[in-house]
Image 1 (spheres, one colour):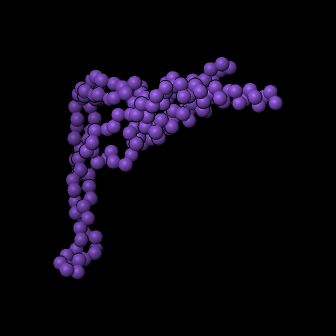
Image 2 (cartoon, rainbow, N blue to C red):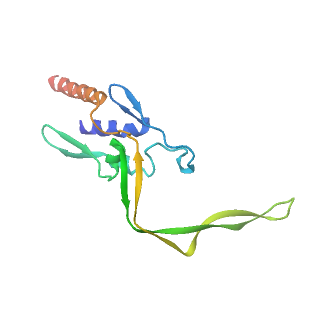
Image 3 (cartoon, rainbow, N blue to C red):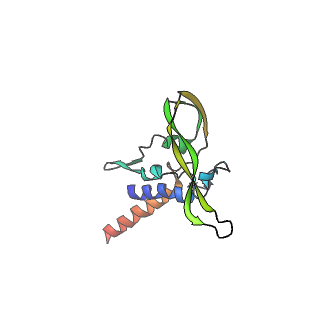
Length: 163
């Protein structure tokens, strides 16, 4: 049953919607950011989805959870301020390099633009408060669909044992 629940919860990331009595699609991201194109809504590194697992089992219960610190905020939504600690940010600049390939018409070498870290380019960011507004994108919790799947699984096991 625990494995069935883990698969169900991880499937929410593929379908990008919560399935209960009705399907609730997750709210889309704000448009315009380059890094948002072509990837799932709650997907960046995949850590959140990979962290969903069976935490404990007893004779009459199974606990499924995650150790990602931001899981609750995404699952339930969050609106408020967060303390950002002091940290170091690297500075980068664009540099053009020759590719070794020359144009026949202009007889100029083609250039390739690369982002490089500036030497000594570290900026100290002071501690500050950041306002956040994360919409609710539920991927774990009670679901009628999951309950039906588990009932079918239990009935199949009982029928198998009675044969």
